[in-house]
Image (cartoon, rainbow, N blue to C red; front, side):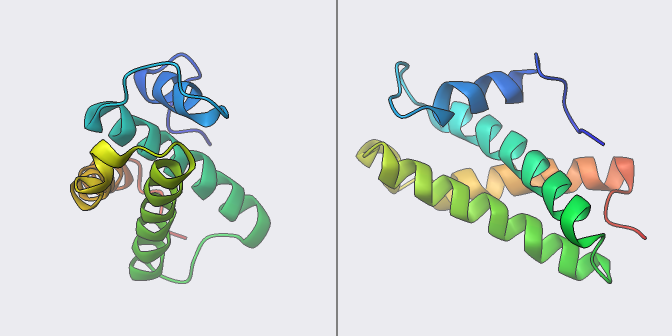
Length: 110
C-alpha cells in the first residue's frame, strides 16, 4: 500500500532531497512534504518486514520516530543550518499530516 503516487508533491519533495546534493532552495514546506513521503515509504517497509504494530499507540510512535530521524538526518547531511531551528516544527507538521492520513486510511489497525 502506498499513501502517495510517485508523481505526488510529497514524492517530488522527497526525490529533490534524497540525493547527495541538494539543487533547490530548501524550505520548511519542502522538507515537510519530503518527511511525509519518507514516513510513508518507511511505514510500508516496516509493515512488509514486521507486520503491523500491536496497537495504534505503537504505530504512532514509530511514525513519529521515522519523521524526526529523517528531518534530523537530512538537515545534518546537507548542512541546512537555516532549518535547524525549525526542525521540531517541521517534524510536528509532517506528523500531523501523516496522522490525518492514518485516520483516513486506517493504516495502523490490524
